[in-house]
Amino acid sequence: MEIINHFLQQGPDGRCSEFSKVYKGVNVELPQGATVLVVGGGGRCHAIVDALSRSPKVSKIYCAPGNAGIALQAECVPIKDNDVEALKSFALDRAVDLTVVGPEAALAAGIADSFSEAGLRIFGPSKAAASIESSKEFAKRLMAKYGIPTAAYRSFTDYDSALEYVKGHSYPVVLKYDGLAAGKGVVIAQDFEQARSALKDMLSDNVYGKDSKVVVEEFLQGPEFSFLCFVDGEKVYPMLLSQDHKRAFDGDEGPNTGGMGAYTGLPFVNDEDRDYALHSIMEPAARALAAEGVPFKGVLYGGLMKCADGIKVIEFNARFGDPETEVVLPRMKSDIYEIFSAIADGRDLHDIPAFRDGIQWGYEPTIGVVMASKGYPGHYEKGYEIGGLDSDFGEGVRVYHMGTSFVDGHYRTAGGRVLIVVASAPDLKEARDRAYKAVSMIDCHNLFYRKDIGHWAL
Image (tube, rainbow, N blue to C red; front, side, top):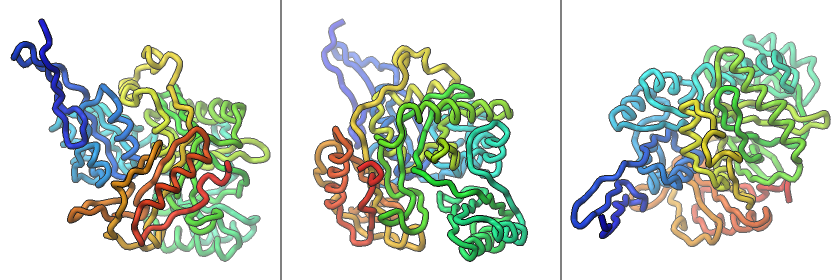
């Protein structure tokens, strides 16, 4: 039968939402692509939505709650990312084929368990497996039991006992709140007074929550880097290495944040280092969780440090990093939906023809610069107008929204971290130049950013 025309009905983002062919005036429906729900609303989720939008197997993307930038590529749904019951009801009602979880709070709330029990396919670890992030003590005990290299530690629930311990400790010393704290529950105390103040916040004043526990660690030295891996039980599929910048200000000064920028293409980590990190840290961690009866399915993120005596674990996270995701996923050439789908179903990725040689990546390094509200990570104000987002930023540049709203025809600040400007280029210096040029084209007098992202490599 002769094909007269081929129509693609497009949504406001230009993506195909319905497929049909017309044969001599007779409309014949073709099978729909997958409907995907992305849970979350920051820059990490914008990067995930962006990657999914490049998949020919995906025809509809929802994001809950999303943000003003994500709304250009997905239909945003006003459901909080930790409202598991509402998210489950939505997924059932809209016949969602696959749910991908971005933030740690949703995982700690047991979203993967709840969805699986309802017969919904989901990419993300169970609540028990996500304890590798949601409980620092659980992660440290796991590493100690299975011989995974990390810093020596002690844990405390009592303020006086912890205070007595740090009195005799060498400095600097690292104090970590046991639970989730949006990347801000770590204090590197330079002396006893700083340690006392941090312990008071965590154990006495309960600034991060009740029933607090603190892990006190030895201070390790060396460059940090992030190793994100797709994990399905004991099967580990590595992504690219990246490095984020946690401190708020230039020169790695100021308080810890959720991350002020990141880049790929690390000159201080060689192939031998990467292989060691994969085979002596990431794979053993996956096997350890499986051996403990809590097999991991999702993204396992190793926050690692290259010390003088070898690579050690600073922390594990149970999800995509933020801002690492924003610089890693733009380099992915493989279909990310196929990866999510295979792991959700427990299929070996290497059995899929397109992945026989592993996940494919582009060669150009990437760098991302976060633009944050003044005052972040402390008190900040919202609602400031952002101009310039419709500019032609040039080749290799994309802007992911981290915390924005769209009110009265204008983009406005709606979070601590507001935007991340990501650029790729044949070398890191050119990528950095492209990113900062684009940053200079964005106009908002209440935003600040670090001017030295990538300094370890340049």
